[in-house]
Amino acid sequence: MELSVERREDARMSIVRLEGEIDIATVPEIRTAVETEVRAGAVNIVLGLSRVTYADSSALGMIVWIDRLLDPRGGKLVLAGATRDVSRVLELSGLIGLAPTLSASDSVADAVGAFDITADAQEPLWVETIYLPADVAALADARARVCDLVAPLTLAEAALFDVRVAVGEALANAVRHGSETGADEAVSVRVTAYDDRVAITVTDTGTGFDGMTGAQDDLYAASGRGVMFMRALMDRVEFVRSDDGGTQVTLTKHLEEPR
Image (cartoon, rainbow, N blue to C red; front, side):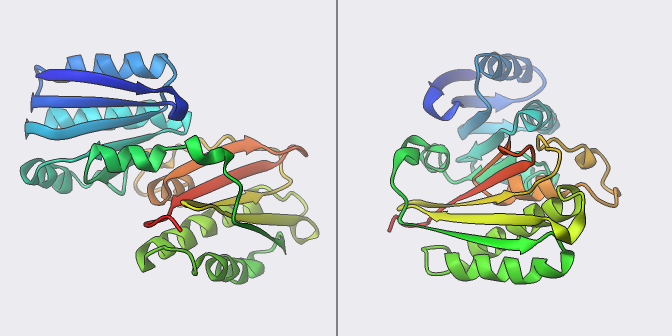
């Protein structure tokens, strides 16, 4: 196994390029490299798999370990450029779409583009804010209004559905857990369009939430999957405490083609 690491501190990201076979003999070296990067401040890891010729259950165990390492940090793991054979192993595992931090990309370049935050200083094209009462009856209308706002952007139909689900989960959490006195309180949704992405910020007035969830360990849990869905469907998810003590979650989706 040959391994190289490229650190991108601007995106708190490390690219770990692998070449050779991933098995019980080589997994410890990869885990050590990933752990070193996380200790150095990386919360997003891209595994470059285009030159990996073999992967077995040890590789899947390693992916689960990285997922659990990044999840409490709000990070993301991208498996980039896997060959057809390695992709089959990943598909058989069912991990992609289930593990909260995990996604796949056709190439390292595409994965890095999704994490590129150097444009955060850009002036937005436009900003719209929606206010709704903290009432479950208002959720469907709020989801629809957000989708109406972002629909003119260069988002494919599937990406628009991702936004709808992720925003719906954020709104549901804000109403159920972030509004102590119910409909008397308000939830705000700020939609900010940039040249290359759209950012949707949901703010409540509750006691604050750091984005950590433990439901992914129990497939039969009745609830607790909302944060997992947000992280799986969006390119970037950030939780911060708002000025009034509530929770502010920002969901970012990159546009397929810059405007």
